Length: 392
Image (tube, rainbow, N blue to C red):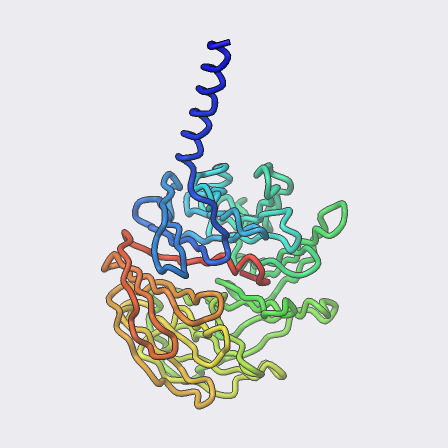
């Protein structure tokens, strides 16, 4: 009898010890992930407490990493530059699964229903789509073959309503729509959209997909409600007659803003934010900025727009008043401001400052700095409320 008691006691003690090693239970709504690009690590953040609660290592090359979240906010899918696709459990602070799916990937998306994770590749080109639970490859979509036998680099991959993914082909100037709503993958292709689409964005309601063009001035717009009308060119020859500047960093169009009936987007090679009427998709104004904009991001209520810049002006953030379309505040967090992320309801914004090894947190009403956190070469910041937004 004593031996049985000893076995039971040992089992209970073992279970208690295992529980003690696990993170305390937490909800996920105020969590997020910050990329530490130099070390292949991420930090898990709590936005309410304004602190880091854990870190996860072993994620490969994160020099141009991005993240999407499962719909229950439990898992973060990390897309690494080395072709790595990592699934992190942000409640246990562990890697649930990691695969190398390509040689050079630059982003990804998760489907509307949460079943699929898609990865956009430079090498070997094309898009691969995986089961979100197991990371088993479900669909391999090679991009249009070029004369040299290589596939096109794919960019601007986003999720869209009705279980679709939309992406652009950099080398061949096309937009493709991958429809996963049925039993079989269906592809719809739109060639001849313009030279070298470099990134794209989805309007917040999921209707309009807009690809920016690096090889020429202008953008290409696809109305997903009316795909029979094809791709429309917008903003043709913006900045005509103005001297083009060297482009040190391509702007990120997924960080654009729609506020009311206006869209605010970064201009390539210019110190400007363009203002677009979303009824006509024509430019109706521009705002002079301190440098070449990279992210043009609105506070969740769309009252103010925060803008960061490419080298050599990447120490600044400028804030635009949407009503007046004027810069009302300039901040100088330090060299290497790479990314900004608003808390879910917008009372604060987190800013990565790479060269200072800092994440700085600002009050979005007063523009005062609230706190500074240490992080090694931080870049992308991603909060879990993204799980419930289209196109992010």
